[in-house]
Length: 247
Length: 376
Image (cartoon, rainbow over all chains, first blue to last red; front, side):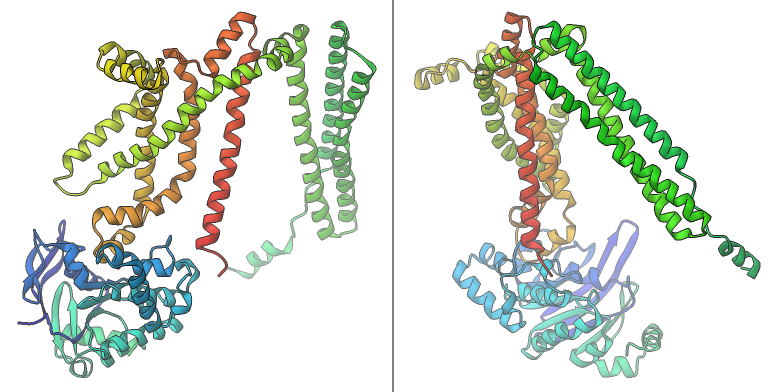
């Protein structure tokens, strides 16, 4: 039994089948990277795991509890599964502090004082404590994404899903966000991340999965996937990545 | 592209048109405008004298007013001068100066013509007021009557103010309920969505005057409200409930409009905000309350103000059920004195109250933008 089990998950939008039988296991404290071309289903898979999308077939289990299908308490599930999006999605009408304390106060029923103390600790961790009273639109993309990570961490999730969190950032801002993720990995946070940062995936992940056309085509240790891919599709994908100078 | 083609495109620089004729026409039209203004002033003086209110003071004022249209010649003549300068620059092959002067001449002449039209329309309006022995002026703007009855109409206008102030508060709440009911997700929400849709369809389609009529006359006729009216009479000494019916009818009508405005505002918030809030474990209601609606409200304030101004104006319709509002009061006065000047007071009051609201909303939105965006 793994911590997070994805068993034969299918997702269909009308006639388009985006996920076509995904099987994937994530152990506790593992960092698993999903790589693959655009449209291969990485984001959809992450959104299915925390219940933002219903799956068509199959099942998802966390801690041996089924978390997919009808009757699941999605609000409860989402407390345990944090997600960070490509486009940050901070709440623009609230300052940074309110962005971080909204869910702990409303969902975990934490007191204002306690939630603010914890938010401040998280902001220190992502090195943004000097911007606690700023509004999202006053921050750079990298800063916003660090706040978004802190906001997800404020719910003390058991697992974090990171959905191409550096794709919308200018190149010089990528590292400040990746450093935070690196630290989280070192602290033992279980993470599943969809990414195009191959060098980073190689460095932090315990396991890399290559997704193509809604199916996991190959999975393995990063050293093996990146230097000795077995699957033909993986080889092609990595070849084009190397040609683009991204690995 | 071949060399010759490229050459031909760049060899001949464009030569500015000759705007001298146009600027001269502008001067002539300005002169005509001045003559029109003067003849209307002449007519005004004649009318005043006929009514024996002519005096030296009035003459002096009229001479001063008559001087104003002469100002049109300043830009008009400047246009001619610049057009001539442009032509002489062109003759000495100074193309850049020619272009600058041409553009400037055109702008000056159009400026003079524009204000000329303004002056002519003003003169026509004055003529309309005083023609036929000041028929229009005395029918709509009889100052003695306006000054005399202003207080009475203003007092009745407080009824309109009470109606729309209470209705606006009720609408803000009621319309949000309807809007959210229309957007409740899931199969279980279907009947609620259906109800909300039926309501908005019905009350957006009904003319507000008919809703007011039906509610204001119909409800008391059914006898269902007898208990309420006797209670209000015994407890608060209120026996005229027409204001209450008017508030209910207008809330029902404008609630449907504003619900649609709310819905448009809520739908304009990007779904990613919804996803972000839900992914933190917030429920549908919490997401609406803390994330979606606060952002939507900022966006809908301008169209909301539109609907509220519509509502304020529609309070004038409540006279159909006999509420003594400003319009009803002024109509009574108008038929007593056989003169519409008291209705002019109402018109003036309605216009006056909307202006500060528009400014207030602009200011509010500006401050909010300053707070959340600020200097980068």
